[in-house]
Length: 281
Image 1 (cartoon, rainbow, N blue to C red):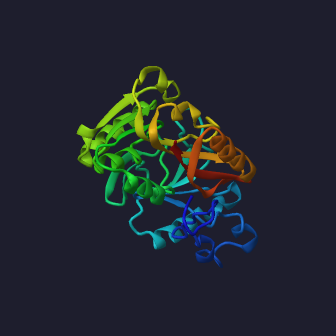
Image 2: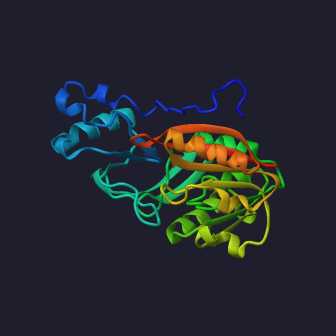
Image 3: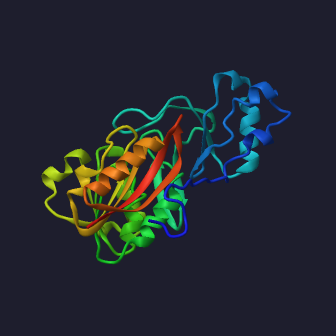
């Protein structure tokens, strides 16, 4: 477990908070409280969920966001939750129209179209932490690889990476991103269903990074069977506090050592994103 820190610890990023304070006086207080105080930035695109009761204040919200982030070229109002096998989201542009952007994160560049692929900038610090653990020569497997935010930093550390993603748009962007970041020779991209990976990949990996889509699986065992002796898995999952403790206990009883378990924000009432570092004995 982490030395000197709680077994279950929150990660908060306050950089994109405080929007309500900026809009005090521009929007009535009884309506302003309904506006999310935070928003997400992906490249030059800002994404925020604005309730329908604030439609008439779109211009004020746009002005406040642009004052904070002058480089923004598109502002999207999130009108639906992540849905479907490709984890895409419904957006309504309220400023600009370009949905293609380049997101920069700890020295890496990710090109993507936010309307066709899933991408979250919220896990950037955890992606860097995991990449910093990678040693040259490791064989790494990344299911649900998206446009490559876990794949490319690992490859840049000198590893060989197999990435699986079923969304053809994400696969195309990932291929572009491996070239842009100079790691294309170290990444093998498979377009397919990651849940079937152990049926056709006949090898073991020293490290497996599992950014599980919300609601898809509640156990990492499907992928842990592909882990080599003394290998490490990084499992991103979603559950409440009681469920995660039960999952930790089940893994430990199954012979695995939990090196780290950290809470990384909430996604629904009482439902949190967690990341576990799991060591095979």
